[in-house]
Length: 160
Ligand SMILES: [Zn+2]
Ligand SMILES: [Zn+2]
Image (tube, rainbow, N blue to C red):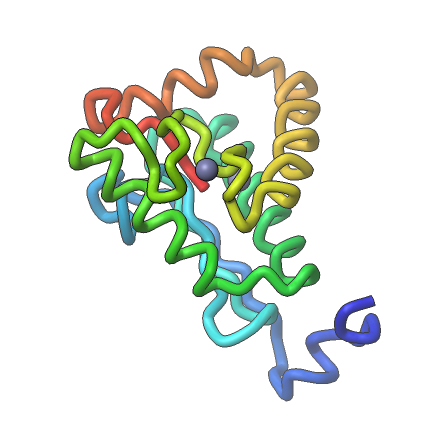
């Protein structure tokens, strides 16, 4: 186990673990994404921001994906810096109308699945839970994806 399995309560010197999940207006995201996670100092303080699409099931599903992915990235030593660097550049290129990502691959709606994505394994695990969970909520995966992809007029159809 990465941290010896100790509680962040015991090791981080904080009284609480904070998991801050909120929807925000899409243009207020840190970069051109519709779902974002960020560790503020360590695993005891996670901030997740989902673009508002007016559907609580969709927004919670996206938040669950982000929380699972962030947790696995921390556990596997995939740093915030590596994930941010990859995603920021990828999305900058998409918004600039480029067809290829910085790694040379075709830009798709699913940057986490690019073979060069530093969080590919974590993204795939998060998706497996997310789409399994979607069934339990009666959510059609295609409609769910489409609701977020429609943001920004369909230009920034992606999330980490
Ligand atoms: Zn690539
Ligand atoms: Zn992901």
